[in-house]
Image (tube, rainbow, N blue to C red):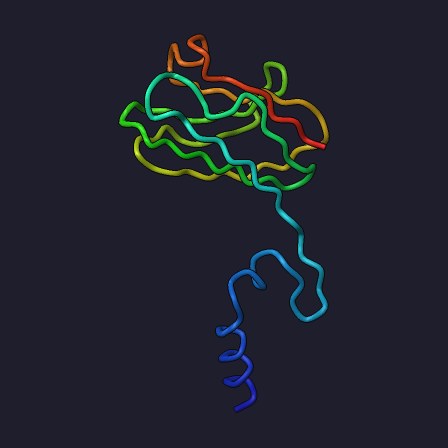
Amino acid sequence: MRKVLALTALALLPATLLAGQAVGGTAAKTVSIARITALKNGLRFDKKVVHAKAGRIEIVFSNPSSVPHNVRIESGENELGGTQVITKKTAKVFLTLKPGRYNFYCSVPGHEDAGMKGTLIVS
């Protein structure tokens, strides 16, 4: 009976407690969120500079346009990861990054050259 009650109580906990905060005295890792959005018209992101805290970072990329875009993260020429190419959707990816400056860009051919790029500053 105690196991059933414990599992029921666990199921009723808010998702925020389970996802990123301490539960039962155990410290959970915090996640920094970096949001990047493609403009609906044109080959641009909504910002040129994005800030995040070092460690586990959730990149949330929104593309409201019917033109396909993605966001990729690199350090120099070293590709670190990024989202899939999407249209009219939101995609997420998690990366673990040390403090520093990183480039973000759209890897769809021609988009980075047209201006779909920026800097991710991790501190």
